[in-house]
Image (cartoon, rainbow, N blue to C red):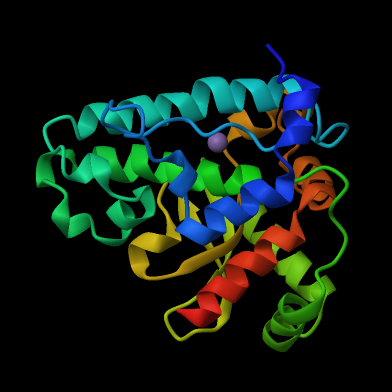
Length: 241
Ligand code: MN3
């Protein structure tokens, strides 16, 4: 079922991004408000078909309703014996994995990572976006990589070179500098003290229906939906902390 368009208009992309940026990554995705402990699947900040023609509606719907929903469900199951951990911000779980019981730590990396990564990913994309960053993000990218074009080439290369399933990221590293990294499966840069600014999901489920084995075509098209205003919010928050 596609999201009602009026509902989408009511929740502007900027509003959703601000909500998440204000409360930390994935704050809108923490539950408990209904009295049921556990994490919940956040709504997409736009309709499933909003990123067409670059990302098709069926991919978006399955990715959100099936894949992301499964990470949430499995994260809740993994932490069912740790009610205090179910109340944390999902990103905080990944930053403090030592607090997670060893027996469920890998499940939290897989499913907590999946939950946090996808919550960010939906906001890192938007309709009528793409192009190049401006302001402080543009300056940071130019400073670290020489130019936006070189950044884009290096980031795309990281996305292409990730063998199997995983992500490519632009992060602020522990030295407070922009860096391109890649993670396997649902591992998050947050686990190693990096702050994600931009990430691309290169699991086949993110592109196979439309692009089949042509990951390069997906990566190229994806630049057209990058939500630089959200990246700017994450950058500004990272610089303040
Ligand atoms: Mn995915």
